[in-house]
Length: 327
Image (cartoon, rainbow, N blue to C red; front, side, top):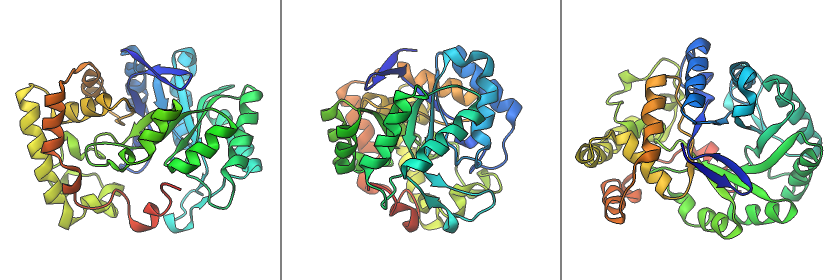
């Protein structure tokens, strides 16, 4: 697989989001997930993404065990800031970006991951009670100490990105970006391009809906958070969004690829590094193949016409979570 740059950091053109191996999408299987991670590395998908709050904590441990014998092949990204105790409901989750917590969280992640350095360390969400200069200053100290190689932000607003980058180079901004989620295109993407900051796109498959594999609520595992409160999967929106996926499927069939591959190829052509998540080797291989799809301007326009941004029904998170984005 070809490489791309996130600031000064070189990564594979596509990564692997590991969150769903431990959390949010129903029961996981560590043996299957480990096999998938190893297959990703074999395919050149060496950019792995996790976070301390996934599980919480257990996803970092799983990834750490999976890469223990192959650490030098991996560009490892993790995140801090969302404070989530095991068993606590979302209403009790907190945010911390104070320097003391930044360093405390990094040490804990290093221990769980079983490594002496994190290649890309993100602030998962901006803490509105702590100046971004203070948070990034602490992250910069981790870089100086050799515990972190590069730093990033997740779901930050354009003004915050500028302030952070003035303190220490920001390698990447991670945000949701897909045919279903395009608000980044207004301010954040232009700001990142101006400053030379890479963009990492999570949920590039619209949390799986753009793959065309889901046709009813019965297709989701028990405990899957998508059907437990995600607006785009709510009854009143689900059918409308599936109609858009069917339109995308018509384009995909013309190219003899899957709707998910077309959706991923579109994200690649925006200049982002997508990190689709999966626990299964067959979907990993399907996703990785999308990195090689070359699309013309006319084909890209046809894709966006099939899934107009203003036709997507429902916000990407529930209202209480939407308020934590773009700060």
